[in-house]
Image 1 (cartoon, rainbow, N blue to C red):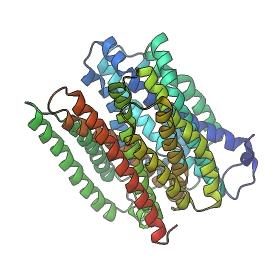
Image 2 (tube, helix red, strand yellow; image 1 turned 90 degrees about the vertical axis):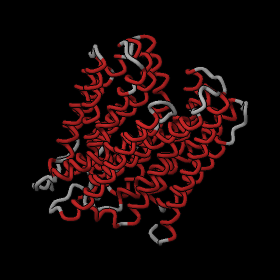
Image 3 (spheres, rainbow, N blue to C red; image 1 turned 90 degrees about the horizontal axis):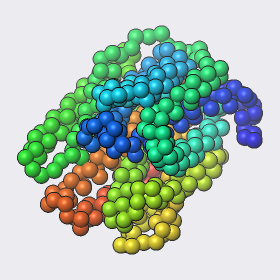
Image 4 (cartoon, one colour; image 1 turned 45 degrees about the vertical axis):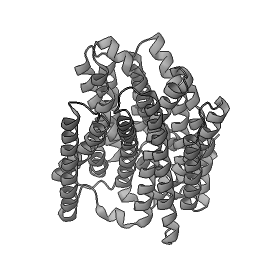
Length: 474
């Protein structure tokens, strides 16, 4: 059905091995996306079942994000030393076993511990998934396969809330984790069968100090964002501010030391020369700004739909559906076009459509029709789908094949931090507007301001992306 699987390649695999390798990486992506989308909607039920507060239950989600973020850079470097195949397999095994542990957890402490292990396994796979696809497919087909990957993510995002809600209401929250077990076993089998061993594995020392500094830097950034999002007036306001500032200073110091270390380390954890390519660096910054915008909108819209417009939780999930449908419609075609034309130009067009959609969402009237909401969300999805795969192609194709693991790790890092910072910004804005107490009008204004902040981030992504053209780098 997908004929380009069997096209002769100038590099990479051919035929059935390509199919199995792609299925392995996309199954891992499916597990990660399902896990993130479904666990969040289950937090209230988990808190009720385990008899804990909502603030403690949030760490079921934050724990995964924290360990994944802290180890992304480490795993992107480690893969060049032990090989993509071995690391991907180990990551899948850890993620699958941790999913079993989550499903069997009888206490919050055990569940959070298993989620921390899940984050480590997830980082081991997600940090190199795009690099594996590049090792399997030749450069001239890279855009198409990245487009299919974006289409898959969009499809999963569309069905995850409904599927997760069904599992949650019929079988219980444990099954949200148990579903990963057969998927993980299948992915491990396909990985061992089809993902190639890399002959150019570098037997060189690992930058342990760089790894520690990167983990501290990334972990402190996550904690800074989470702490700032919890600011509120009251007795604990100054204490929370001090904690957030401490994390921020720790992140800055660790980042400064990390950069110094990478400049002098004989075998750095993250070769800084990959950022000398302006096309790579600007594509990474464009991705960061876009995911910040998306992260804001994904957090703000449920408040808008439920608090302001009065829709139920299930109806709110349905109102989200046009966004991933837009990604499905645009992603694969954008990927194909980026193999033939300038990926930078296509990503700029997608960024413009995405920014327009976010601005239109910010301009929604007081009582819009369902069709009005859906059409604006659909435009956001089409724009994001048109932007994402060409921009990812820009990042991966503008470093050498030997350094594609590092580029893949950077891609995962900017995606993770973009979404995290976006969510934190919503928390900061809503906290600021909620200072006077439970004033519904102020909360509505906070939601509106959040959407405009998302629009600013989306427009910023356009300017960064256009600068590639101005510098003659497209």
